[in-house]
Amino acid sequence: MSTEIVPFHVGMLPAAAELLSRRHARDRAMMPLLPARFEQPRMAQAAVREVWSKPHTSGMAAFRDGRLAGYLLGQAKFETHRGRHVWIPLPGYALGEGEPAALYAELYAAAGPVWLRLGAFDHYVMMPTEDREGLDAWFTLSFGKEQAHAIMSLTGPLPERVAVSGVVIRRATEADRDAFVGNMSPILRRHMTGPPVWAAALPENVGPMREGFAEMLTDESARAWIAEVEGSADDPDRMLGYVLLYPASPSDDNLTVSVSERTVLLEVAATRPEARGRGIGRALAAAGLADAAALGYRVCITDWRTTNIEANRFWPRLGFHPAVYRLVRKVDSRITWATF
Image (tube, rainbow, N blue to C red; front, side, top):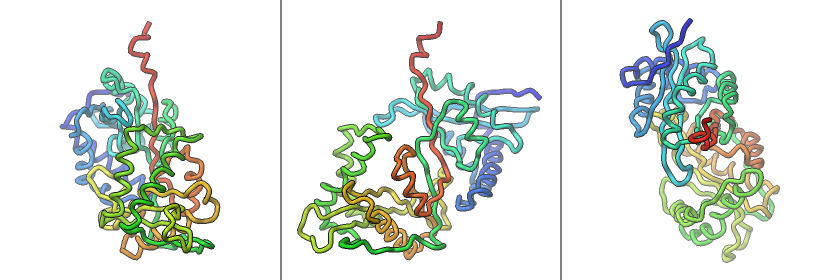
């Protein structure tokens, strides 16, 4: 059966939505905590349309016997953090039921030249963790895991809240701002620059990061928890770690955030290197998750670099289940001239 690969256009949105809604139903069968609404073609179409409407988005569609068999959409982005790159979100692709995952390779091969002409050599794709055949297809294309996006139910048993000797776990207040910004903001940044993550911390981002930490303690929607040495209220170095949670913002194209089952985002957490191994991180997370459950949140999401060895062990042990991987491929930019 022959396959025709053609550029994607707006008229294909309804058919693409049908493929996405069925794919999401298959994903939910393996990961029930994913939101159900995207199984509806109407909501799936809103998701694909949101992706397609973004600037510098292009893609390809595969047809068999006049029927849409699959599609792939990517947005070229130009920014300081990742440079010129292409982003393929969860609603940016789907295959028909029974279609071989190898069809992703054909779609990618057809879509890629446009992205390379834009100078976008780094390619990112979000993939459900339980789609083993789909993951294998992207791995065959030289993509690798970079980030894990995970989900936890807050309606079942939560991590046990344990006491840590000599340590107090409490909600942070605006009065903690100076110590919080000065002592807590560098922890994760410095950890991520170390082995084997080696994620560059650009100097121009340090100022905005510190400002973000200051805003956490004045944002009414944020819930920041800190661990500190007991009886050291006046010591500027008293803080040992923190965890921060926000309400997760639903959007048409975010296939991981529930609307009816309220979702909270565990945005960031870290413990000082010298204080690790005492259960402080677990105590902080347990306090934050119990608080979120008491506020009526039913699902929590978080994410981490898969090269972050400590995080890759800690969060699954706590009860988070990876639902989506961010994959990345970095194409050799010399392909633009080394074409002899």
